[in-house]
Every structure is written in structure tokens, then in C-alpha cells.
Length: 409
Image (tube, rainbow, N blue to C red; front, side, top):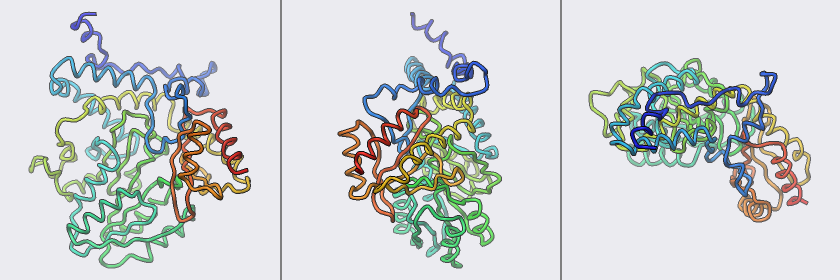
């Protein structure tokens, strides 16, 4: 095919959708998702190992992968910045769709590379008084803690660290924050769904409590978009950070920064942004040349997500999680450290085996059972984080259950 013909036929050049059809995933009665067909969309199922670590990074299904590869090709047929100019309508559409998905007002979302980058922009951009306090718990992501500690060293703010073991009740968690709030408290940092136990924390109640005392709340929502329903406007969230490459199955290196519109101007500009852009969320996109095709690939990920639907996807993840937990929760020497109630956890959960560290379990599962999983640790000790995904089936989980039972025997 000649170069000119290839360009003319590119669905990206024409601005066409990513050609993902709902009928691909529906059973013949057009009412239920055919999860076997969904599974077949993911190339990772052909890997020699069983991938149980979507909590660190998800994987793209074939339609999203193909769309993103097409974008890479097209961007290299022409000057990349000319292509980026052509793609602005797709980028704007992606942001608008994400805003609708998470219940966010207009001009509140910017695409970044991951949750960590979004949190860095928020934390470094917050204007706090000297000796102003931020409250952060032992359940926060380590890189977020690093960002706050670096800010404290540079700006003289104070960090109050609290500790509580999960799973716990909403009241108990809320009370942990209430007990340490002082007149100097300016910010509470909380993780929406914790990266270890996968516990969904009561951010709405914490935000309500904080706002009554003029305290702003930074929410780490790395594991939430594409996995659980969100309405950031109703929750009155101040700042929210998430990744799109985890549970939305978007291209790797795509994340989300949310700032309540009236607070955009309160954050320091990104160092390379235009001084006159102080009140515009777009001031956080001025980071120079990057993988533009990744941002455009979000279009196909949104299509794939929409064709399945959030509620069917959420229900499927819950069913898969409950399936393996039910078989292991009464097993001697096996401890599940996640509340599997759908109100308190999603696809991420954690278990430990008495007599084994998390690192040891990772090595054994990889060496003897061809399983890729992540070690984690909490106040309860050391174990592994299990992340089910929509490309798993019950046979996959039977293999995992068998392996854990054999190790624990």
C-alpha cells in the first residue's frame, strides 16, 4: 500500500471511532456480557504466566493496542506536532468523556502520565503556610509520602502521620483523622482505594468533615477509574489523581489530574506553563514533547470500556474476587486481609500465608506455578496482593487457589 493510500485509510486521520462493537461481547440473547469473548480480546492470556498484578499496571486489549499502534504509525508519517494539532479534537473528546464518566465539571480534568505525576503536581502546587499541617496515614502510597516529605523539607510544612489497620469501619477511620486535626491543619491526604488491601475508604465523609474546618482534601484514586462509580462533583472533591492504565485498560503512561475548577488558580502554575494560564486546568499540560499517541489511545480504551459498561464490569470483578476468597478464607494458615463486601473493596485484595513472607510467596508462585503477583506489607505483616481482572476466568482462579493451598499445606 502506498504511503498516501495508507494515510487516507487511517481511521485516526478520518477521526472515526475505534471500531469496537458491543455485539462482540454480548451473548446471543443480547442481554449478558460474554466474558469468554472479552477474555479473548486480551493478548496477555497467551503469556506463559498467569498475570495477577493488574494493580501495578493493567494491560491493553487488542482493539486498544491496535488503535494505539496505528496512532504511533500515523504520528511518524508526518511531523509529530502537525499530527498533534490534528488530534486536538480527539483529545478534547477524551477529556469530555472522562469528565462525564467521573461526574466532573468542565475544565476540571487534564491528562497526565500517571497517578504519581498528578499527585506531584497537586502536592508541589499547593500553597501552604509555614508550619501548616498535612495529615497522611500509613495506608498512603509510598511515593505520595515522599512527595509530602520533600515538600516539608523545602517549605517547612509539618506532616502528621496516623496509623490504622485495614480493613476497618468507616467510623473508626474517620475518627482517626478527627483526633489529630488541629488549627494548623490545612490538608488531609487520603487514598480512595488502598494499594495494599484494596480497601475503599469513606472519602465523602472525610471531605465533608474536613470542609467544615476549612481543610482541603487530596485524594489518591489510582485504582478507581474504570473500576468503581465516581461522582467527584457530588463528593465535593478538591483534588483527585488517578491512573487510566490500570483499570480502564488505557495505554501505559496515561493518568488523570482533577482539580475543582475554583481551586485551579490556587495551585502554583506548572513551571513551564504560561503565566497568564493561572486559572486554567490546561496549565498542567505544558510538559513538552511526550507520547502523544498514548493520550489518543485513550479514545479506544473508553470505547472498549463503554461497550462492556461499568456496572457489568464491576459485578464481574466482584464475582471473581469472591470466588477465590470463598475457597481460601477458611483455609488454615491463610489470612485474607480485605473486606470483600462490594462497598469496601474492588478487584484488589490481599492475603498472607503463615510462615511465608510476601517476597517468598512471589518467588514460589513465579518459579513453581508460573504466576506473576506482587508482594505487599501492612500492619498485619507481609503477603501478596491479588488483582483479578476481566481477562481472568474461573479456571485461572482455580489454579491460584490450588497453588496457595499447596503452599500452605
